Length: 135
Ligand SMILES: [Zn+2]
Image (cartoon, rainbow, N blue to C red; front, side):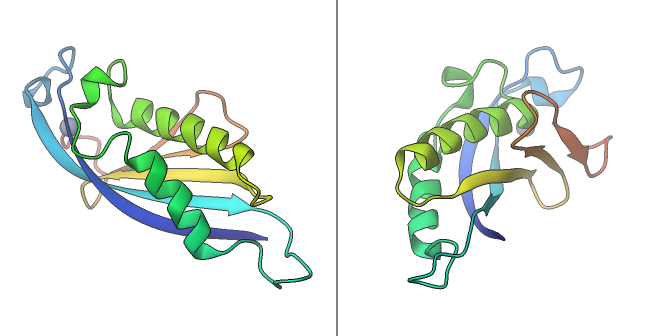
């Protein structure tokens, strides 16, 4: 069974190779949706405690919240930010005793644009939203 949580963070980035104004330093409020998969535990009748999962997600987002992403992630497009968060989340979930695995991670850049990565993918990401809008 799958369950998910979502959370926000704010950060700045610049994309020097982008052929538009996103080459300049600017910021976004990003939204992250994390879906995990696991078995329902017989003692709790839950896959995982939402608050425990949220705590893990929060720990990971603290790495990027109110940061200049170019200092943390090489070329921080939404795709590369999603890959970074996926790697950190998978590591933290593995170290936790929650017994759940990352299924997918979706990162919104603003309200109508997102990328999604599934756990089985190593580098491929899906892109949604208006292709002509900001990066
Ligand atoms: Zn941007």
